[in-house]
Length: 312
Image 1 (cartoon, rainbow, N blue to C red):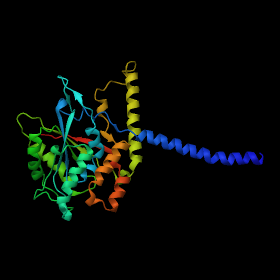
Image 2: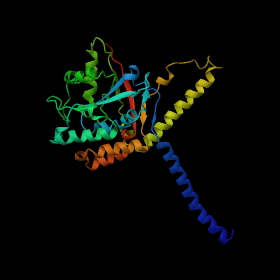
Image 3: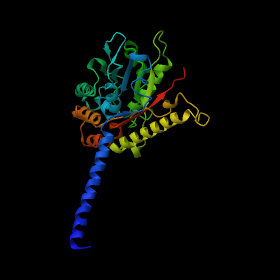
Image 4: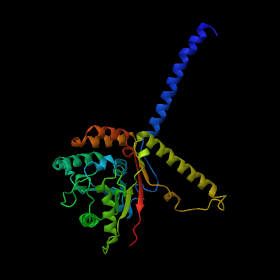
C-alpha cells in the first residue's frame, strides 16, 4: 500500500469511529425520547372504579414527589382527556397529593411547604388537589417511626371526601430506608384493614419497589434496560397471540397474561426534564449530593410498582 493509501486509511478510521458514536447516540436518544409504560398499570388499569378513578400520591416530605415518583406523576398527569357520553371533555383520572409533614427537621418547614406547591405545579398536580400537613405526631425525623394508627386516622377524611380509588406510596423499605417513608405503607394497610365505609369500595394500594443499591444509581442505563425489558415482554406476548390459534395445547390462553409483569412507568427525556425542573423548586434542599442524585438516580427515570393485597 502506497503512502497515499495509508494516509486515506488513517483518515477514514477516525471518521468511522465518529460515525459509529453518532449513530449510537442517535439510537439511544430515539429510545429515551418518549416515555413508556407497562400495560398493567397504565391510565386504565390503575383506575379501579371505571372512568372516575381518583389517585392519591401519599408522601412523607416535600421533595419526595419529584425525587422518587416523578415518572409516575408525569405519566398519569399526561393522560389525554376523553369524551363522556354527552361529548363533554373530562380527565380519565384525577391525581391528588397528600404530604404528611412539612419537612421541618432543619426548621425550614415554612419554606418547604411553598416549594412543594411549586414542584407539584411543574409535575401537573393542581393546587386544589394537594395538601401538606403539619401534624404534631408526624414530624420529619430520621429516627422516628410514625404510628400506623395515626397515619390511618389522618388520611381517612381525605380518602373518603375525595373518593380515592388508588393510593400510591412507598414500600416497606421506603426506597431510602427512611423510617418516615416506611411508615406510610403500614399506615395505609392499617386504614384498609379497618375500612368499613357503607358505599365506597376500599381503594387499591400500590407501593414503589425499592431496588438494590447496585441498580439504584444507574440513571439512563436503567431507563434503557427497563424499556428493552418491556419491548421483550411485548414481543413475546404478540408471538404468543400469533401462535395461540394453532398451538393452543402448547400455549394455553391466559386472560391475565398482561398482568404478570411488574407495573412500570419509564420517563422520556421531556418527563425527566420536568422532574429536574420540579426538583429545582426545592431550592432549600439543593445541596451538592442532591445534584448527584438527579443525575444518577434510577427513580428519576423509572418507577416499578407492586400492588398490596389486604386480607380483611
